[in-house]
Image 1 (cartoon, helix red, strand yellow):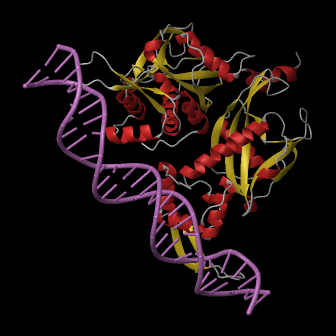
Image 2 (cartoon, protein in one colour):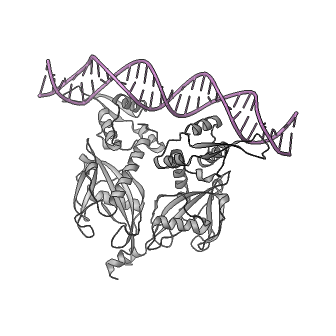
Image 3 (cartoon, chains in turn red, yellow, purple, green):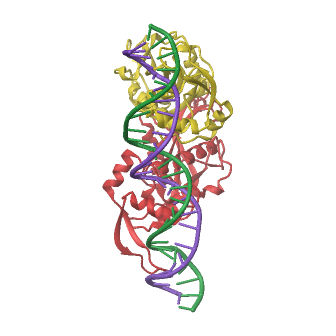
Length: 229
Length: 229
DNA sequence: TCAAAAGTGTTCTTATTACACCCATGG
DNA sequence: CCATGGGTGTAATAAGAACACTTTTGA
């Protein structure tokens, strides 16, 4: 058995589903594989876990290699371990997802990729390995999460309008929400601080700007809430 | 140690949290370790995953070795992979939980255990490895699940009373529920078939017996529901 | 006749849904 | 003055929570 074959005899990796929001669609960051197997195919960014590296650290590393980003909300979803999911050997992978604001970061292809690009969720084609299954599972988990905790609020600029917040929810949940009901709900949660400022230079009535009440926000993250939308 | 050898030293296992119900407490099946490390300590039943074995198959195998049980509801929770979680090397573990009716099965210690025993959730002490953390995470997930799908109904006899069903929920959620509200809720779900039979030989007013409407039950399992208790 | 658990309704409060028009701004 | 998106309230319905007494049985 060659060294490479031995290496792949049994190993574990992390794969990251990096969701991004740019004010419109929900997108996912994919890399184009630079090496076999599946060379040239789009895939989730992932890497083998180093011997002295925690799983979460590995996921953070992959994220940072691609986006330069640290300290982002990152959550494990589950392990995928079908015997034949990797053609070169037994590799189980632990899937993580994170959620970032696209405009804040520059994507630079990491060593394990030819190129990296944001793809709209609706335009994701057939991916390498079992990555379509992983992506679907992560999206479902993100949607559950967003209904039960103030996740994704980091995706907005420091000062934002209620419409921007609503669009974020609509993008993640792939649904339309009623404007009045959304505002009622979000305002009665007491999570937002009205800055008493208005948008400027917009060709319509300017919207009020809000920011999060950091203390309450942290509390909600810790304790969860039910956002029945 | 070379880098390749380091990767070789890694392995993965499954650990099973087998919850059981006997009409009273919620219990968990623990084994007493027969070998170092943590020899003599109580632990979750688990084993290394065979090279040609899927993760879920391995979890099913561990369950069967202990209880003789097949085809039970079994769900992956997540991977635990802290670098030093296993004193002998790098071992990440995938946690699964299942839920069975204690009275239906005889526990026989598997090869990897000195003995196996049901422990009430309130009497679980310090476990080997990071198994307390795994157990806590699995319980939390079971509780979430039970609020959103008809899980655990398999734990009751084919004909059961509403009080028995309520006690099951109370055991899993570790809470008291209002009898009238519970009955209203569960009956309006249309999940139960009134058998028009009564208990016999009980020293109190005999209760009506119910069974599940199998078709509706399957539909709820597939689609989920919200059991706001 | 006692103990034990079964069974049963109403009221109050809160959350959810559906829905349509006027307002402020820049071009 | 027009196009654009911002902002607002109410009524009807549904869901959830709190709460106490009578019934049936075996011992």
